[in-house]
Length: 149
Image (cartoon, rainbow, N blue to C red):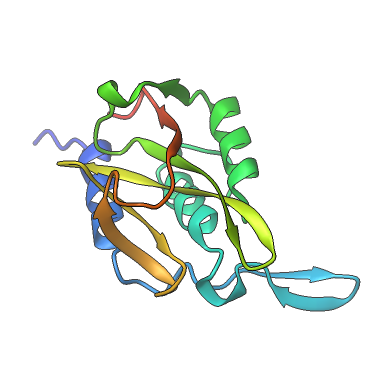
């Protein structure tokens, strides 16, 4: 019997199955002996969501609380920027900075095909599906990893 793990298929299914989950809602850190929720109960969970899905599949080296640290890890791991016309399911999208609360933040999510994406919705505080161009933000960059198989 020849059994082969289908990493790419499992990766795409996990991304799609993440819709509605609360599991990426909280990331606690300690600063000066004070415990805080770095993701603000799901308000700022997009990087935590994306980086941990990538980590589960060995596509990055760590989970992260920020988009910038997620991008840095992805680039060091071998993820490459591509143009929008080359996008495929599983690619990572970074949207431009937007004011959220008192700060300006990038946003990050996954492309799942058919001009749809999954990213953390800060109002619902969990991953949701939306149209690729539906966000009130422009796409800043798109990353792909050639070695997913």
